[in-house]
Picture 1 (tube, helix red, strand yellow):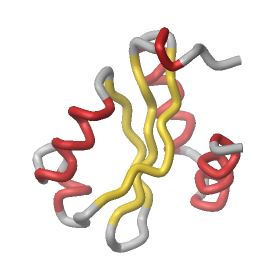
Picture 2: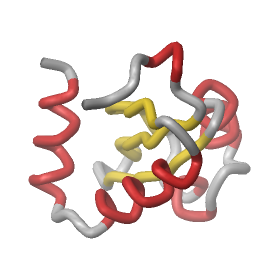
Picture 3: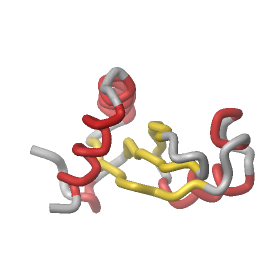
Picture 4: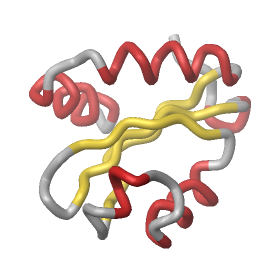
Length: 90
């Protein structure tokens, strides 16, 4: 069971890059992190693949949980990541 967004102290997010690739990261402030990605200052990977769009953001109870979930998602293959993002909207 995921915490309510207003109780989240960290987030795991998946972005779709301009080349169609997916990027997974974590943050404590989704809006600020998205702005950094859009400005090309958040990661070398997304800087070369702008613009990016947010597919999904998962609220997490703390930064440690967010880092673990980010690592888990990064191990998934692309179809599983897309299914995870699609399921979050359901």
